[in-house]
Every structure is written in structure tokens, then in C-alpha cells.
Length: 310
Image: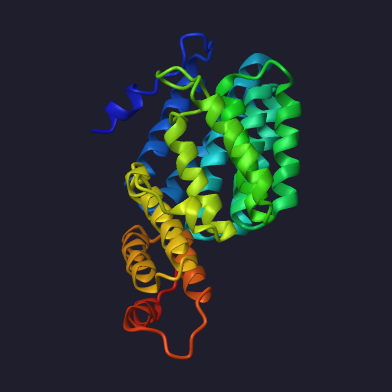
């Protein structure tokens, strides 16, 4: 069961990583895959132990080329540790791990990996409402790549820029970035994405990003469409986050009953996977409704949230 997803994401044949670095990278990829079906709290200790092993091997490496390869693998593992901390709701640790991932990518001397880690931190900052910091990070990522960046990097970074603009309340700039991201995504080949991307980036991901931007901007017309529900195709935690965005769109459109029914569905996933990020996003939707006499569906959600500590 564990081998199948790992073998599906073997490093690109052009990647010359061998020996210890290759074995450690496969383990990191396996953990990234497990994140979709495993609570982050259950994975965190294992991933951090894995990262300490990589760091120890990197320090003790005598060959410069091997040290750079191990630094690249360490960057990927640190980024995963950051992602798991983000999901737990531990933003301070997430930011620290992402910073370590960027630093390790620099030690590896790989501009593509550095850009990936900068973009990932930008995504985190946008999610937390830090629009200026997120935009600065995406600009750094583009400078790291220069003009010879792969199409998937261009498509993905444009989507991150859209999230940053939405966090800053800039609808026009968010729309432009989404248009650029969709145009680039439509040109991508339908094959395994290049390292360090593990999951494919395609127009469906751009459409989901538009829903998230619409939720941040309070634009029901961006969130609610005929195919919106069908966008929730990722793993359970990703689906829950998208459902929260859809709930926010319904709430912005005045459909309170539907909004909080969806928020309740997302909360179930958040509790099942012990995801602090999902639970806090549900709480944010609840805070956005101010009413002295909320309907029953809202009171039910309040009762379910009471006593939840994640």
C-alpha cells in the first residue's frame, strides 16, 4: 500500500540524485503522500526525526556534491515539516520550518527548489492575510528562477500571487493573476510534474484557487458556480478547506443555512484529522456572522465548536 504512491512519483530520470539522497527523497515523498490520509499530528514526529537524520548526514558529508544533494533533500523535508505544522495550526513552527527549507535550498544551489520553497512560504503568508509579505516572496521566487523558469512554476506562482492579492482585497489584480495562471496551466503536459512538484498543477487547481480568492474577497459570483462542488477532488483535508471557502461564498450571498451546513461538514473532517487549520477556518466563518438571534444551524455549530482544542 505504501509502495504504490511512492513508485508513482519516482524522481525524474534527468535527476542525478543517487545513493543516500535518493533513498531519503523517496521517504520524504512517501510522507507527503501519507499527509492526505493521516492526521498531521501523527506524522510530525516521524518527519522531524527523518529531517534530523538528513541534517546529520549533511553535516558529516565530505563530498561537496553529495552535501548539496543532501541539502536539497533536507529542504524538501523541512518544507513538509512546515506544511504539517501549518495543518496543526502551529503557525510559528510552520514559518520557522519554511525558513529552514529556503535556507537549505540555497545551500543546495538549486534555483528551482529555492523558488518552490519561497512560493510555498508565500502561499502560507497569503493564507494568513499577510498580502505584502506574500507578494514580496513570489517576486523573490521569480527572480530566483529568472526567465528560464518551467511553465509549471509560472502557472503555480501566478496562482499564489492571486491568493496574495485576494488577501490584500485587490480584486482586479487577483483576477489578472488567475487569468495568467489558467493560461499557463492549460499548456502544461498531462504527465508527472517535474521535481520538486509532487502533485500535478492543472486548470482544476486554478479554478479551486479562484474559489478561495472569491471567499477572501467576499465575491459569491467567484465562489458559487455549476461546477464548484466538483472541484473538491483532492484528499479529505483539501476538500474540507474548499468546502469552507464555498460556505464563505454562500454566507456572503446571504444563504446562512447552506453556509453553516457546509461549515459543519468541513468541521467533521477537521476533527477527524485533528487539523487545527481546518477548525480555525470554520471558526473564522462563524465569526463573520454577527447576529443576536442566529438560526438553529448556527447554534448547532457553536455547540460542536465548544470545547474543541486543536
